[in-house]
Image 1 (cartoon, rainbow, N blue to C red):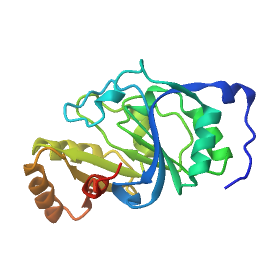
Image 2 (image 1 turned 90 degrees about the vertical axis):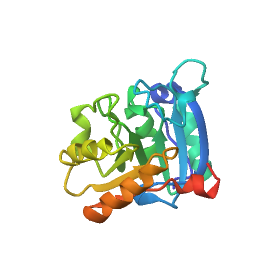
Image 3 (image 1 turned 45 degrees about the vertical axis):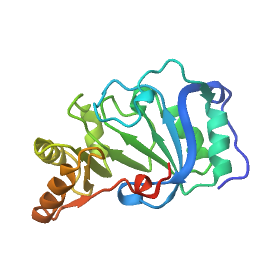
Length: 210
């Protein structure tokens, strides 16, 4: 981690609409349990009916924060990684933000539905495709981790279709939809029959933390 941050005058003044920033543990997937600083950007046009952050859908009504400010508070948290999430973060051009974070010596992860063209320089990409808005083709070659939320049995077919398009090195997860109890059994039985998949649980919810 660097002690000081050298910023471009142009980039440093650019702002993004921010729903929240917070320091916690990554609750899901391959990096579960790791110290993470989350930057939740406003704006989403995917609109999953079971979304637990619907307040992030509109871009209006959220404070704007500069790249300089976001980088400084991320540095102060001293996390193992910074996670850019949403909403749907790829609604924004993320090259300026990721450039500054990485210049500051921070590891940068993306959580996205892939519904828009990929921007930004990433150390890890978690791709969580949604049936409500088709992913952009630019996402598939970038995927380190595929995470499909399962509410109904036909979501498993969607998961297979998406898995066929990501790199063979991508880790594949199925995550039961939190408010759909029978989805847990669907995922459990599917993973038993398909050992190339893993189960992802929202452990932050189980722990009662953000």
